[in-house]
Length: 490
Image 1 (cartoon, helix red, strand yellow):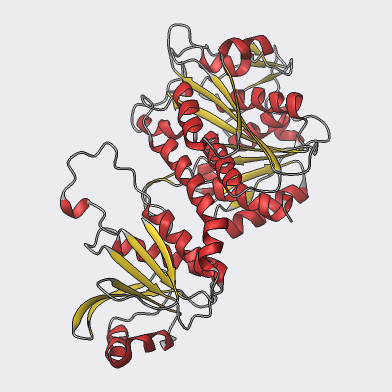
Image 2: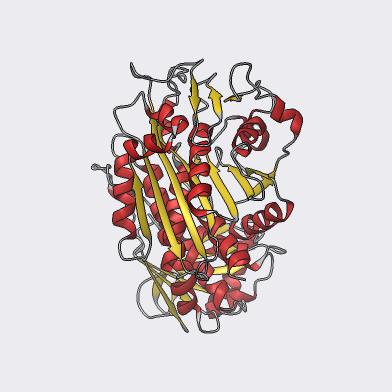
């Protein structure tokens, strides 16, 4: 979908979108003689103007019939949130309406360039679809909206969008694509190839470790997860050097289980098809690095994607096996479905030994337990550093990728002690997301700031949101991008 910005409404056929903040009807003045009739209609419909409220009507506009979509922006809502919800809501109503062009008129709202650009951001994010495998769509199931024109923004909105938000759209789109693709299409090797093709020319440096290279490094935990699959594991390294020369990088590490059967500790059949998105953390890291490279972020970032497929083959890891991690620590594998933390253990060790990062942020669709705690509203945040946790929460609030901090404590750490190895990969049922985080923390070296984001409830959505359709959300890309902008580029 094409986005354009203009100082005034264009001529021709289009659907007109007018925002209304609460019961303030002043923006309806753009309708001229139709203003009073539309205001009365809104009152009759009990339209309150709350954020994402809509009213759709057809009006006489200089002798032609025009579709009018009134969208509420709410009162007391932050301008950022209101702007993105406005763009996303408008597209959700118009995308398959039969209209080819929509005009969002911001005149009278006083939006600055960034707010107008964020309207475009919300619109384009909401417009994302992946119809590659749908060959028999009916006409009323096909997207018709081709063009959005945003009027207003006090100048500079087009430049702001292209420089700041269009790269983020590209990053989120890559993540959604990776998460949406089925596991017979995206597995460790093809994940790497898809990312390579997507970031070509961006300035990112890529390095790939195959099974032999990881075996030589002693990555027994990650390779143990992969050994039941015919698909070989990969470790993808993405480097962006936009900061000071020689300055230590910040590391983003993603869990990339391209399909998770649970291994020998096999999952129930019902719903297992959803486990194609168990690589959402790695997808988010790849998307974030693409966004940062495209907008030429002034920071040094290294992204690590630990990529495996967890299958119950004849050579699969068994409950009770003991593996030796790259760090030298040993793990008794009690449950082969607690595989993501094994992948992350070797991935965070690798990045510390090879890049000496000052900060590590890992993202993973790690535990069902976090869903019990936070549902689908927040991702869980665990950290060994209060300042890092606070800055990540602030980035989450601004980006919409919201985080809720969870505890870490020594009593939880004791729950993963093993009688025959340094640790076991699961504790008791209680506090499952916390003991998973405690496991990862055992591989963080002294003095390294670390945060873990358990995004099991956020990578995929069973219902549409303001800026995404049902399916892959792209969670994590905007969080990491905003953290870089707020902390590393400030």
